[in-house]
Image (tube, rainbow, N blue to C red):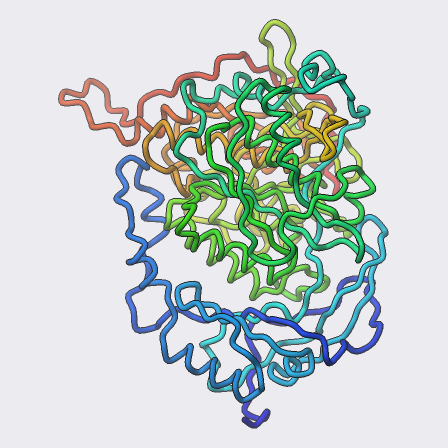
Length: 604
């Protein structure tokens, strides 16, 4: 096949990471596997509308058969055959072809891949956010495909394996405690900290629920550490001791699915390990919170590499999992959005964002809720350009973005909850206005403000909700060795709180909540959640109702369940009032809007 017949793959442009230096060409003999994503069969009926389905109350939705969804999703046989011919012409092996996932895995050497996709592959060296030197195999410019594949191929991932970033975990200032045994945790709690089970009452999780019958998918990215270091995982024996002896509850059922990379590879979970890219601390946090708040749910940890290819392959593994059937996803990872006009320095290509968001939409059609952390570096989101940046994937219009708060409980039952902002780097909740995703129809009447950045456009507002995340008022969890118990927070802690809550609401409703946002914004009564009205994250300030720091606020778990149940209740035979939605059960504890910081001019 002549290279003159090649065309540019739309949205595949990449530039090198900021500050990255080219070390030299990639090893031409290096073995690699790329994931080629394809369009759905253009001759089949399109899938149902995500928005229309989400607007139906959970208890009134009719399940969509997986066979029907697979038919709408699958790739045409002719398109698969075209990719196979392309692979054969370039000496590439078809390692896997999944027509429902619309993915073909091609294996070959770096030289073969560079020739097949008309790219130049090189080795790059850069310093990450922790000033650690790291390398990656990368490319600059666009990917190219033969004209015969124009419009068929939607993305090619794996040529460039740059790390996307780090988890959204933040460690508290208090020293880790070391009790004589786990049973003594309650007596060793640092001031202001909580055990995860304490949040059950504080946030009014529905009584009589524990997540039974639900499966929670916990996303776990690893394989980003330097050679010779473990890259991230958990120890089941340590978690079992923590749940049973420290929290006094039964240990949840935990299993693994490996989408890409080494799988469960526990290493260290201190600051030094975090800075090496070891995600062990993140994974231990997610499992501690989800397991404490939904102890009877089945927890499945999906492991993958924190690269574009790892992201799309993990989401495919979750969406297509016909064994575990997850109903909720907890995601504690993210990056600042790419700039839609030029993409300079972006962690993601535009093609990757489109494919990932398409997979989120597929999850929504399967009634899977996705809870994503909104970021831990305020409105700047780790970009030192004096602008505001939303964090992806929380900025996707198909997920529930979860912001962070500072939570203080004063005896006997006074709760003070404000925006989390420690006024230091990586010490404030993310949130803002997306530059990539336009304003969704369900946010039209939510009072989404213009972006802080010129030309002050209005886009998807983030987050949607919030929960405690300040690392100084967050949760005590076990270190991976089981000896120390640090206080850990970040929106990494907030997202699994919401994942556990939705699993318990699913249990109570007898139906999956699925994609919550359209109902949350248009039909759930105001005041159902605990509105956070004081504080800021840099460029944006909290206020009544929705804001770009905490969304609609923190859980009123029972109230949210009552509101969703009311939407699906039959209308009374002789209505005496026009209201169609029953009033929610109020969150029990009083809330005071007492801020820990005075208002000040917006900054990023």
